[in-house]
Amino acid sequence: MGHETREPVVTAQEVEPPQGKPRARELDRLLGSMEKLQASDLHLKAGSVPVMRIGGFCRHLELPPMSAERVQAVCYEALADGQRRVFEESGDLDFAYLLPDGRRFRMNLYRERGCVALSARFVKSRIPTFDELYLPALALKRLASFDQGLILLAGVTGSGKSTTIASIIETINARARCHIVTVEDPIEYVYTDKKAIIHQREVGFDTRDFRSAIRALMRQDPDVIVAGEMRDAETFDFALTAAETGHLVFGTLHASTVTQSFGRILDLFPPERHKQIRSGLHFNLKGIVCQKLLPSIKPGVLRVPAVEVMISNPIIRKLIKEGEEAKVSDVIEGGKDEGMQTFNQALCTLIQTGFIEEKTGMEVSPTPEQLRMLLQGFRLDEGRRIVG
Image 1: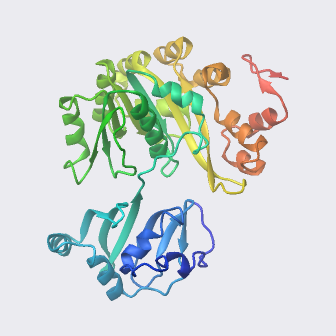
Image 2: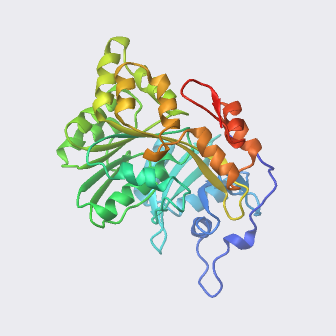
Image 3: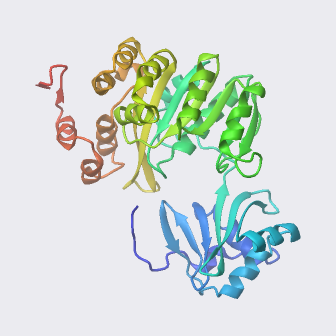
């Protein structure tokens, strides 16, 4: 995680209600300012000024610190009587909160050193397009066009995986008359039905837990499934089975590269099942998208994704089946015409188009020397020789 100065950077005027309108209660004013400030989260803590996460960093608002009594009073304004009783009995409460204009927030109320604290996540209703997110649009549109199979989005926490999936699902929503079911923890974007019908299930609100929701999915007549994080063997087995039976399945992984993604998948299973899992991936895996969010130097752009894209082709499927996943990156490097690109190719493009500093690219590159060669107009051929 990055660290920046603790000096306030958001002024009090920026969280005031518009002139001429009645003054909203304090929590509504803070939440209502988040979209304008491009903030994803709000944090309230006893003895601290309100904090918003903007551009990936926690930034302190230019407001007075809030006492424990004030934080509790502000938060309790948002609760129904029954919610307040649950919180006081358990010390933790998840709930949804709507502003009068319909903007939605996912709230978590909890106790911290004996005092009430709040974390609020802004649930966006407008889903950005591929172009607005600076994603490789042609490749992602191709992945969105599949009727069945497994597509994985990989990256560390906070790398934008959920936003990328939302953009893909919105693309499907606009073109296909199908049934989409998502299992989310938490819901980050709210879809509006277009050609598709979409059901969004939030863990803790709409279903007891993630596993219960996954087990129920096949009884809900889905065509497209967003199964969330592939966190255990049971979830991944479900995803493969659903893909095999004609569904298009999206899932996420905590992995930094395509090659590492294969290792993460196999680590979910005992060695005696690896051959079976490779066979399932050979037949059903359609693509892997790995991304990292990087600080941008282009005016008006806070962060930009570096995206590695693998789209399964006969060579990649053969390598997966034979257990030679380490060679997949070479195929990706030569697969530009199919919409594929390595991290280094993505970083090279971001540097050359003025989105990121060369220093940033070198720091995050898995192989900085190869990135340097790309920037100089060289690359490695299949025999690992330098060519112009």
